[in-house]
Image 1 (tube, helix red, strand yellow):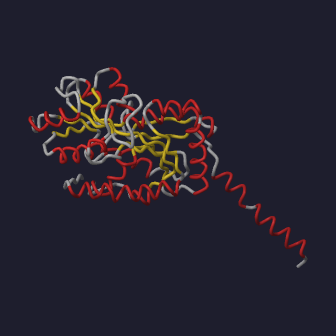
Image 2 (image 1 turned 120 degrees about the horizontal axis):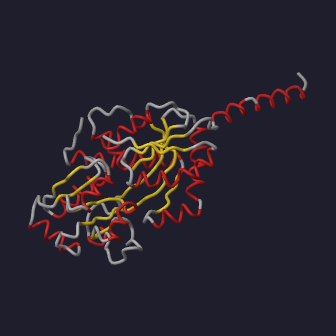
Image 3 (image 1 turned 90 degrees about the horizontal axis):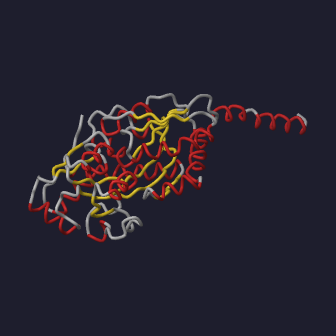
Length: 323
């Protein structure tokens, strides 16, 4: 066969996959972002912040859909059972998702098989805050009050086994007292309850909690993360106080159905990364007390695998199991 013929066939072979790859990466109908918690929480705030820029990037409307219940598993299961075409996405507190395999005896999906990490989005430290009626202005006074009133301090959290619940358990153990853990249907509901005085304390993402603290409906006592928050420079970190879970917080990320082709996952990651880099969006994320932590599919998966093991140890140590 002539060299020219061979080159022509080779060029044709290289060209053949191009239309299929392009088609696999295209969006031919609206894209859903499933948020498995109620409106007003960190995941919901972030999804609605990104939706307009993603609509432009995808060339299709992006719709945010709240599917609450079972600590985020109802929404996660919806995405796990959706078509593997990149049109149904899960935006979730990934630390909460990472507890599911060890916490639930009958999880309806396999986290590692049925959900594909697309990109990490942000890290928002937790704020430990109390209702103003609690007679504690600082960490030392709060610990003393909790010890003097065992089981009388109700701690609102987003659901059994979620990150802020497990962090609360570790804090109570460190303080050497019993705190009454009260689950709500998501962080927004817990915030509302504590702000109303129904519960007395909360550990929750800074993105959603900071506005309550600024309004005076909650009093910040301590924060997780590597440094004090700019908006609350007088509030010490867990690490300064010698408390456990010093780097816990809400790690928000986006996942697709586990069988989504790699070209589509990469397209999603690229468009979402571009939306996160829009100056107005980046400024808003900073103002909400969060840090941009965009990472691609591979590094996100590595991080998630490690997080699953970390929280499994906490779940086992506290004998937590749910059906």
